Length: 334
Image (tube, rainbow, N blue to C red):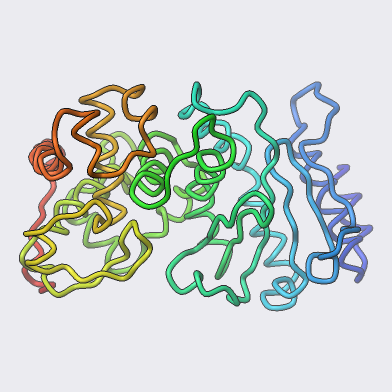
């Protein structure tokens, strides 16, 4: 009744439309509860970036800057609908990430700044659906809302581990391994599940056909996908293929890469699975207390060199793929 009443108040002014949107969302979030506090608060941006981001939405864990250019590009209705979908899961997903890193974060976790940048002006948008630029510039989300859903929790883990950690994570392997491990393997990640973690089309069907399905839900399973893709990275059929490494560079799968394995050469899939392997075999405290060491120092912590650990992880990961019943044949894609 009330939602229908407020919808009748919508006018052409976009700020008024967003106000109505926020009221409706607050009413929906409060249905069946006695909590009078709204889950988020909308206001006009009074800061220096108000021209580009005229509206700000505050939640407990994030401050959203809504882009005027993005609204004009995809349309106000589509923009608000996409925002509605993502914000429904934001607080619970962010809370899951904080829980996964509990004990290694500062006591106070300030809200992270999040900006939509769908117009794709950032160089990083060629390779990423989002990017964390540090505390001041916050998280920038590229392309569209689907891409944002797929990567937002990953970027939030970067915020936690770079800015809110008692001992910040080091860039490269540790940062990306941790972000993908937490967002894809440790957390439920409700946002990303709505768009199959950004996996779509032929690749999605390829993995569904080969067993990347959660037996309890019948849906795409990111855990099976991660370990399967990590194993496939070492297949002969992948020689000559390019991929994004944890160092942020486009690399080529080659015999030289296999012969002279370096920690900076790993793909995101290998890194996430290897992070899980290290945690399961050496303990969470050992791994999280040393997430800023150099690859050359791994022997001091784990008793083995990176190369030895990588080989052990390969055997562990293949055994898990077999346990999942994954078909890793990809000769037809050579």
